[in-house]
Length: 138
Length: 138
Length: 80
Length: 80
Image 1: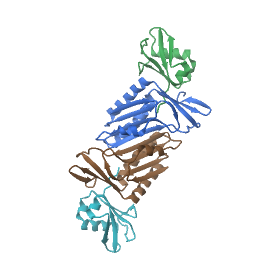
Image 2: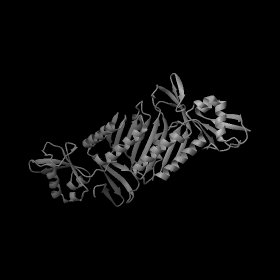
Image 3: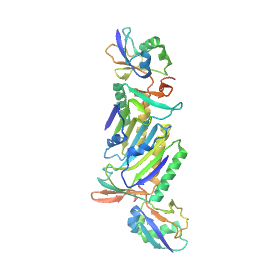
């Protein structure tokens, strides 16, 4: 199962988990990215995410295919939220299951590392006094 | 936050996640062990887990302290189910957050690897025709 | 010829809109388009980097652009 | 002296109960207790391994056991 979504509604770890039900896979690794209350700089009021939808889904599909080629894993789920997020809300869920958990851990880590490098999604951090597109400037 | 539990009621990924709210940690890695429908051998009807409670909690506490000593992580949650579990139910949840996700992944993998080696919890697989304490025999 | 350029994130703020229409020379390639954008919008130089996507794929510098392509400016991504 | 031994998993099935009472010699240590159990319950030899915990900690072979200790037989664990 490959389940890739970009949603403007709240993400649910339980709903994601319910989809990871391959009968030969007892181990599931899940990475969850949440909106932090603080960055290195200052207190975060909210985050605003936007995506280039069509291309973002294509890049997520490439990640899923790469992961399946590199590791013996079964189900791969990548859900990314867009829109306005408050502190504590889930921005991204990546879940991978496999017959052997080592592959699930490695594949999940690879997927989030690669997503952050290649998938055209952007976040703006909004502070009390100002805002900033993350990573935009050197 | 260190949250260690052995429970005879259903485990919830959402409830676990709700506890992982350290303000400096945006990344959470969660490992979930579920009851598989099949082993290498045959179809599983149910699993029966039992724990040596007091010692199991102590060994879980050691894992949590080791993890905190080895990696810059914040919250560590280990919930293990005991009793009779059906296919698809959650046997174990381990969640670790950290300011940097690499540490969360490594720590979470270390925690489940170590739990499986040291924490006095046992599972019996019940098949249609027989049952077996997992790993009991060479 | 006239081409439409999608812009996202900080590039949308610099170019002004999510969808932007520009008059460019026939046969323009990705490298030339990048130069065109930097010249027209000097703030693009302040970005750590930016890429061009053509039809939803990151495009190499020598890819030639025509008006039928979906062209997008991709500033540094920051998903997750 | 009489000691109580907790047993779990397959060891509980072999010894018969979760809590088992045995008459053993004064000054018995963990190594001797392991031999005692193997002699009394030959099926213990079929296990991949088994350890003894004293007061909730894995105990080395030379730890001497007394009736006040909480002693447990720990067959190969299989949590997770």
